Every structure is written in structure tokens, then in C-alpha cells.
Length: 74
Image 1 (tube, helix red, strand yellow):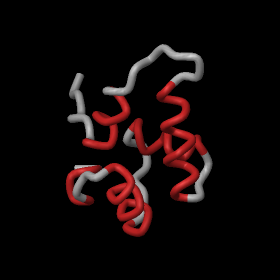
Image 2 (spheres, helix red, strand yellow; image 1 turned 120 degrees about the vertical axis):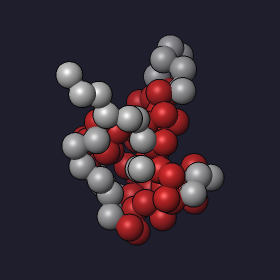
Image 3 (cartoon, one colour; image 1 turned 45 degrees about the vertical axis):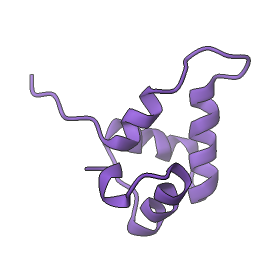
Image 4 (spheres, one colour; image 1 turned 180 degrees about the horizontal axis):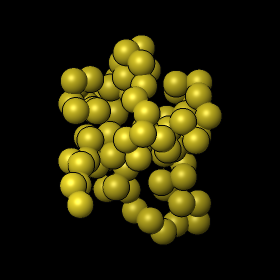
């Protein structure tokens, strides 16, 4: 089975801790959705690689995360 390389966006998400009073990954997904004005399920699709955000949303995410836009979803 062919395994796709993880995007930088997914790597940032995977690096978050999994346990806390409020799951950091859930908070992170909520924040990314808020910044881009999309549903949390859309952000989860980006993480899964089934969808990719448009250029404006990539720019917003890049500024928030401090990662160059061309590295986020490559």
C-alpha cells in the first residue's frame, strides 16, 4: 500500500500533545477553523489530505503558524 508523505500542516498537528483538560489538538483545529472561517470538519479534511485550502487560507495559516506557505501542504 502506497503511503503519502505527511504535509507540514499535518506534522504540526501531530506534534501537539494528546492529553490535557481540553485536548490541545481539538483546540488547534478549532483555532485553524476560526482563522479561516471554515468548519472544523474542513480543517480535518486538510489534515487527512482529502482537501486542500485555497491560496488565501494557506496564507492565513502560514502567518498564524509561522511556516512558509509553500511548505504547509507540499
